[in-house]
Image (cartoon, rainbow, N blue to C red; front, top):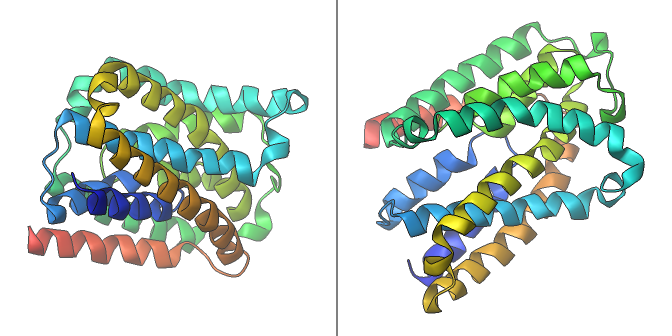
Length: 255
């Protein structure tokens, strides 16, 4: 991996982490185009720059990361547990799913799901307009929906947002809860990969590449969060559904 590669991957990660279009799927595809093998060190690099994007959540919502919001974070933890448990039990099986073909089909399927949900979704009928008002039952269902994100190309943000919309959250609140839910998910994933690959990551050129990708990912992700929320003030997720389908079809054609 070169410095240029880490820069490109950092930009892609920053843009896609919080959008319902699968950051992991885009990183896999980008790695293919850049000619990067899915080695342990490259996989760990991708996870760690994802963590940089997650730190952008803290900068975007500093007031939420206080003890006064312990009730909210209890719900976030509840939503985190399903993917943590299933991901731990089936970690080997999940790693075997990392391929362009699977990513492509999950892009398409996810896009169709978004279009179907938006077809019948009525935001005026939603009853949860703030993340602080999410119930424990809603958090639980969102957590189960997020399990689908273990399949590459599905999108962690996408699955959690769909789950949130289906249990009564409006679009903006669904996105914001997804942002917060990303924090424990990526903290756990990053901590695991750091322990597993710390010797490879912190050696010479690897550290420089990591630092470059980390900083770029953090800055771009912070901007993406702001722009995404602005987008949701006036538009639906239909555009993302169409993008997923088109991108998935292109991947099947190219690869």
